[in-house]
Length: 290
Image 1 (tube, one colour):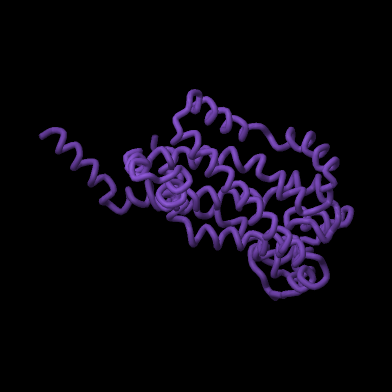
Image 2: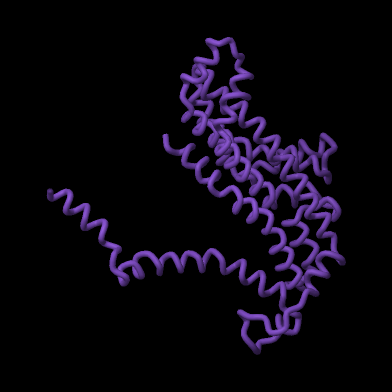
């Protein structure tokens, strides 16, 4: 009875409005403010005319006379559309290659049950912890010797070096949650390993695949070090590198165009997250619950 009484008291802890305000609404409001304020600042700055950006008068958090001049400059006077198209191609291609390799690696480690599979899985995840700032030095030599420097292929083939380890670890956890009995029944019925992977494991792992895909796509979209090192031509640059290198002239920062480019560059990732957030959370929980 005492335990029931304690549980009942715990359930009614947030019943009063002052307690809900202090313990729930105020922390949630602070979190939302910190999370969304950078996007609000980007939007405000991208719509401000230059005279408001450089003026010390007025309200810095609001736009008095909105303008689309910065977006016009970004889209028609720079190579931003090409940067955006390059980023889409590179991110989608690198994500596809990484998912393909990660699915095969995770399935082999978790379902084939060979000796030392756990150590292999751990070593793959530890490879993800190696900083890209260290990896890009030997990768630069390989890219140059293969004749891929200043091409999209330089990024498509180097991005999987940091995408595959984490995606493999994530899919390993999700494959582990699928019952072995399904696979054993398919083997008894004469199915091959490839048929089991394609017809049983992958359909049951859609949340995990979407989660790994969103993670890989986001990292590819926002990657900066490799894109800055392996690409130099303006027509091959990605959005993160192009906005920083082309819209800053010496000590002159074109803040309106910079913020407009950052705002437009963040929209695709935000849209993808909004559509697949449930699958993303499900994939992460399925990967870490064991």
